Image (cartoon, rainbow, N blue to C red):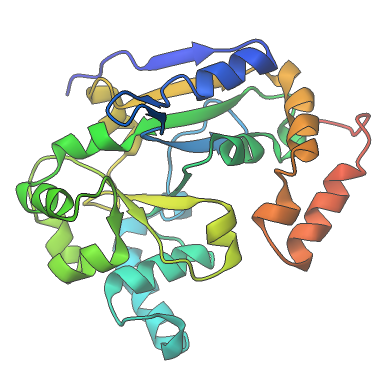
Length: 270
C-alpha cells in the first residue's frame, strides 16, 4: 500500500483560516463560489477519521448487524419514510447508535464549531478535514458512478441508494477496490438541516477513510488550527450565531450553549 504525503496546511490567524477554508470554493464552470468540499471539524489535530462503530473497540465489525437489527426491532416503524437499510442506518446514526457512517457538513463554519466546542480540548491544536466529494467519487464502482451521472448529482441521497442497493452485504461486495461515497440524509429534523449534514460510507465497517484519502491525490486536505487561535475562533463564531443553540435546536442545545458561553476563560484546562 502506497501512502502519499497528505496536504496539511497550518494557519496562524483568523483571516488566514477563512481564506484557506474557502480557497477551493470557486467553480469555474458555474462562475460561482460553489465549493465541492465537505468538512469535518475535530478538537484535536491527531484524531483519526474514526467512526462511532470503530470507537466501540473489540470485534466491532461483527456487532454492526446486531446493532442495526435490534435498532430496527425496537424503534417505532413510523420513524422512517421507507423500510430500507439506508433509511434505518442514517436514523440510527442521527440518534447516537454506533454505525460505520461518519458525520460531515457542507459548512466550513459548522465544522469550525465542532473543532472549538469542547473547552477541555482548548490546549490542543484542532483540525478541519476538507474532502472534495466530486474527486472522491471518481473512484466509484461503475454502477454507482453511472447512477450519479444519470441523476446529474454530486452526492448520493438515501433514495438513490435504496433504488440500487438492497443491503450492506450487497454494498460491501460491489468491487474489491476501496472507495467511499458521500450521502445526504433525509431532513428528518432541524438538527440535520441546520448542520448542513452529510455522511461518508465505505464498503466495510473496518475501512479507514484516512488511508483512502492519503492514497489518492486531490481528494483531501487537513487544516491545522493552533490552540492559541481557538478562543478567537470560538468568540467570533458565537457572534456569528454558529453555536449549539442553532446547530442543536432545543433545550439541550440551548443549555450547552449557555454553559459554554458563561464559562470564564480562566476555566481550568487539563
